[in-house]
Image 1: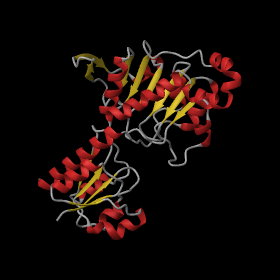
Image 2 (image 1 turned 135 degrees about the vertical axis):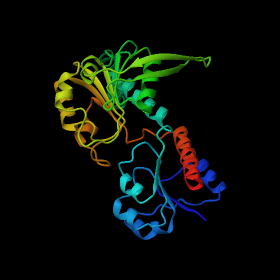
Image 3 (image 1 turned 30 degrees about the vertical axis):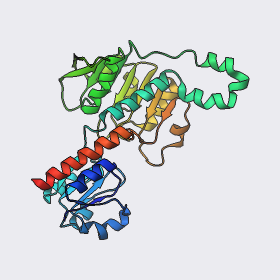
Length: 318
C-alpha cells in the first residue's frame, strides 16, 4: 500500500479522496528534526510552508516518489534535486488564487479608510473623543478610479486584476519574465454573464510612476523587487501590498518610505523573518498586518486539499 505523510495538514475532503483511492494517509505531524528517521517509511509527503524538504532529507528516502506542496511557492523544497532523483514535485497554483487576491484587497480597503488605526484607537478613545476621531479618519479614499499596479501577472495577479477591474480601477500589470503579455480577464456580474476585458502589461517604471496602489504577486527571489530606488519612483502617498513572499520588499526601505510620507500605507501578510517580524513593522500605525494567511480560507483549503489529492493520485497512476 502507498503510504502518504501529510505533515502540515490537509482538508478532510482531500484526505478522504486519497483514502478512497486506496492510499494510507498519516496526518500525525512529525517534527522537522525527526523526519530523517521517519520519512523513509513513506512514498509521498504533503507539506505547506512549515516543513522543509531539503537535499539531505531527500537522499535518505529511497522510497519517496512524490513531494506535494499545498500552495504556490516551492522555496521550502529542493525541487531540482528531487527531480534528479526521479521524485515528482507537485504544488497547487490555482487553488488559493481568489483567497490571496481577496486578502490583498482587504488590506487595500483597510489602508484607504484607516481601519487599522481606527480599530486601535476606538476601544481606547472612542467614548471621550468620538468626534475628534471621526474628523481624524474623514480623509480616506475610494478605490474606484484609482490605478492598481500588479507585480507578477500569474494566476493570483490575474485574479487581483479581475477584482480591481470590477471595482472600477485602472489596472497596470507587469511581469518580470515577460516584456509584453495580453491577458483576458473574466468579470462575473450578478447574473453570471462573463465580460472579457483586454489587459496589456506595461513597463515596470510606468507602473511605479502611475500607480496609487501596488500589489506584489511573485515567488521568492534572491533580491527585493521594491527597494529605495523603486520607492523613489512611486507617487507620493502610494499604498503597497505584499501577500506574496517575505523578502520581495526591502523592509528597511519601506519603513523609511513610510516615515518620509512617500508611502501612505503598507499591507503585509508576509515578512522577511517569519515567525518573528520586525517590531517596527508590526506596530507602525500606517501598516496593516496579517500572519501569512493568504490561503487560509475554508474554501481555499478545501480546493487545495482536493487538488493535491487529484495530483497525487495521478502521479502514482502514471
